[in-house]
Length: 289
Image (cartoon, rainbow, N blue to C red; front, top):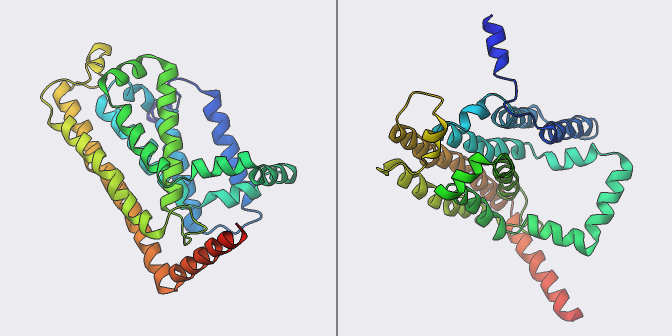
């Protein structure tokens, strides 16, 4: 009986075929890609841990409680926006999943990336200003009381909210965890260290404001009926603290990884080589112009 009760937690609160299909595609590509590229045990653990956390947060009974408790909703977004994407991108799955594509699709992808539209798409998805700004914006905008009210009532907005924070999380941690010098990496090694500090600050301020607010900023959870017997003030305080401390700790982890990359590249002299290569390319462009 206890086992059956536990399995009930895995039943989706609202079934999403798009989400299931997305997870199946990602898993199949990663497994197929492992036949081409060697993937260390650590990278496999990161990938599968991140995928499991994302699935549990988006497509189980937990989603019901996230819609009816503010602090659970913030814990859900901690996984969707920070922890889950961080773990998946720490596995560096891009090359592996690309190798998992059928050869015809890989050739089409290669040809597309060589077009103007393909280069523009990559430039936007890896822009060192736009991506961190979007990462922070999507945390804060969904916390606005009026936006939160409608997004929790309309299932289309609710799914847009969850998908947007997951995608922005992948984009952001793809930049921060990059192990290469710049170029070819979109963000410099030093920028990867500084960026988490900059993106962390407004999230911590927002969490503190919510945690210490004496008014009920999100009455929706009271109107819909809280799933756990808890006052609005306590619920809101725990939710704010979740944004303030655990989310900041995840960003600190990303910062430390980026700092390790900076030190490794500096010790190998690859930072200076990247600067020389960049200057040589700039000179070549100037001469050709």
